[in-house]
Image (cartoon, rainbow, N blue to C red):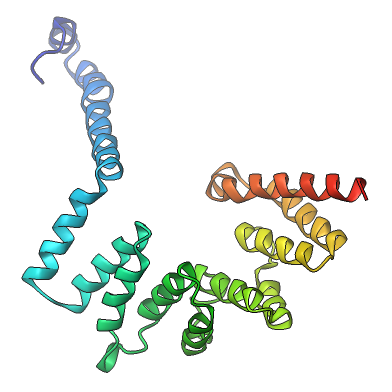
Length: 230
């Protein structure tokens, strides 16, 4: 028994050894372990630079492809995309020069620093890879075409996000694209379909997409309000 708990647990285990032990384990031990796990995750979020220092030390000790990727990905998560790209570029040699994981990471960071032409160039290397379709890197490609005024190419990519029960971020981005093209009725229809689909999803599925579902509802209201004032 863990020190510091009330004597009630001792008496319960003495007089009802089997049931008492089970109650103790599920009520106290597992709850404490779960809280410790949550606490560890919170510390990771609150003190991200603690992990960063460790990754930097790891790379200094062993300058490998994997350690460069881990540190670069962490830089990217912190919004330090130029530092991330410097490490990604170091990994572009030999057998790893067109590694899909590496290229898609570079696409995301290049989009973050507005290097849209570079995004398009890199995307051509992985566009046929099955994991590219409807990924964040793919969405960066669609947005890059839009930023450069290549609307036909942008829509070709956006259309691939218009699939049932998924890709709510992509659908939201597509709706924003249609709005910018003065095609508000199409944007509203797209959002209506996405919102309706979300109503038929399981709780777990909806939770995974809840942010972009809510964004879609908000955008739908904005479009409707804008349309009614014209």
